Every structure is written in C-alpha cells, then in structure tokens.
Image 1 (spheres, rainbow, N blue to C red):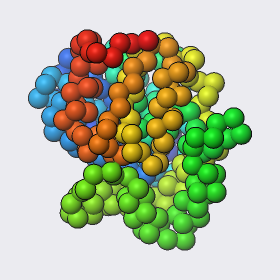
Image 2: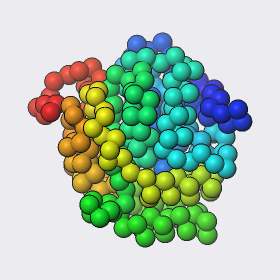
Image 3: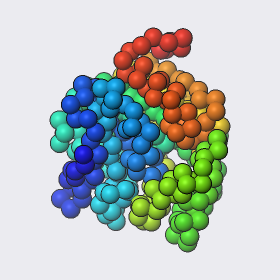
Image 4: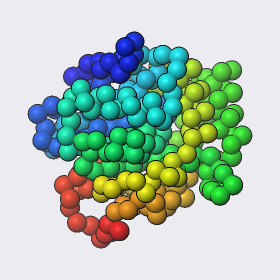
Length: 278
C-alpha cells in the first residue's frame, strides 16, 4: 500500500506501508542513490512475522517529488518527522542504511528521537563518509567529489561504478540490472546534491545525543562506508550493539539477508545474544 505525504507546500514524499495492522513498526530509510525498494527482501519477510514495514522514498528519489533544493541532513530529517506525524507513529524502530543511516541519526538529535523506541543502522554513513584531519578512515574527499562530477557528466556510468563497489558477494546480472535501475529513477540533481551532503556534512557531535538502544550492522568488506565507521558509531553511541557481517560489503541487507532479518527481529524483540549492549 502506497501513498504520498506532504512535507512542504509543494513537495510530497512517497511512502510504502506494508501490513498496517502489524503490532511492531519499522520505518526504513534507504541509502544513496536508491529508494525504498532496496529493502524488498525485508518487506517480503518481516510482515509475515507481524511487522509493519514502512519505507520512505526520500525527496528526489524513487517515486517522491524531485524539488531543486532540500538535500541536506536537516531537511531530510524534517521530511521524516512529517511522515512520522502524518502516520501518527509511536514506539517504532527507525532503520537507516548508508546515507539513510545519517538521516536517521540526525533525526534522533534534531527531533529528540520523536516516536522512536529503537534505532538500527546498516552500513551507515556515520559519522563521516569522507576523511578529515581527525578522522582518517573515510573516503578521500576527492573521490566523493568525483561522484558528484560524474553524476553531472555521465550518471549511468557513475551508477555502474557504485554498483561494482556495493556488493562483496556475487550477484546475478538480472539483479545487478534491477539494482542499477533503482538509482536511475532518482533525479540527477538530487543524486549530486546528496553526494555533496555526505561529502561535506558530518555527525560527530550527534552520536552522544542518542539515548535509545541502537543496533549497528556492518559488512566487513564495505568499500563505501568503511568498517571503521561502525567502530566510531559503537564508541560514540551509548547502549549500542555492533554485529559484523563477515560475507558482506555495503549491501548486507541482500548479501546476508537471512542473518540481517534475524538480527533485526531479535533486536526489536529484545532477544538476548552473545554480544551484550554496552
């Protein structure tokens, strides 16, 4: 079931809402440059387990409106708040992948975790995708700038390159083509401006302000959001649990989807595991 939510007078975002009668709600925020359909292999499984799965296409991506401006963490977090209020969500799990994880973290701070009972971060672009003087673990700034430049000069080729970096395990050619099409649906302008955002914005000061149980899932072969980012998240967020995915890159939600779904459900249900919360 899908519908639109107005986040500004002239901007609507698309929301996919599966199993509205589910008693456990997960709000998924997709990564760059994708849309909610990246979570197909969660939406195929979790509703049958009693979960209400909500996926937002962030502005500029998927089926949402594609305005010229508004591609910053603050504005994206405000868009999420509009969805939460419109759907009257309470006691839900906020789940974000890659840049979606950055939006989720900014939402927690900017909106004081409004309605959120738990936070889940997957290959999250937190606290910084790019290298900085006091954080040498990200991508070189010039590499991210190259994404921006290639978006404006040959976006399909840029997307192919991202696809080559995304997965550690083999994915079939039809799956690769489907995944490529998810990126093509976005506007070029939004794709470039979000890349500028994750190049220039950071969330170092945000982490200490998160006060809900947090699950961090990260592929050890991630070449986009390097594994050191997950360690920084664990160190910076109180009450955080980190689970490594040994056979995944940036696409852990697909590459190890059975383990991914299991870890997410156990976290939401509060199941105990060998790795304790700090």
